[in-house]
Amino acid sequence: MSNNIFDLEQQIQDCWKVTDDIELITNHLVRELDIDAITADTIVNKYSAVKELYEIKFDQMWKTFEKVCAEYHGKGE
Image 1: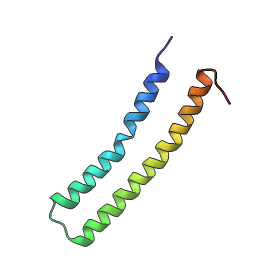
Image 2: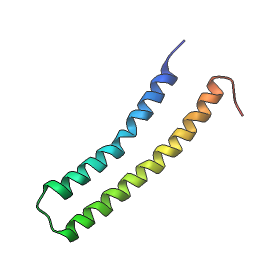
Image 3: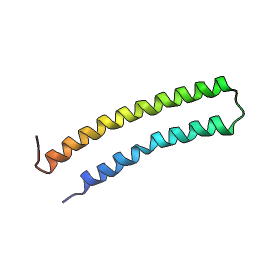
Image 4: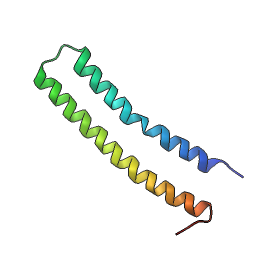
């Protein structure tokens, strides 16, 4: 039997790391670079919005994945 469904699960989990990357780069830009407070707030707001967008997308994708798994394993609703 193919492990594609399990590979898919791992790939989905790996995608969530993008939000960690967004937070990392935001913190780097704010703390490590010489920028003023207004610019720092602008950067944080923009990156926070992108992070939230991806959290929503990944949550929706995960719900779909769980439904597919239930069907795949014969536990359909």
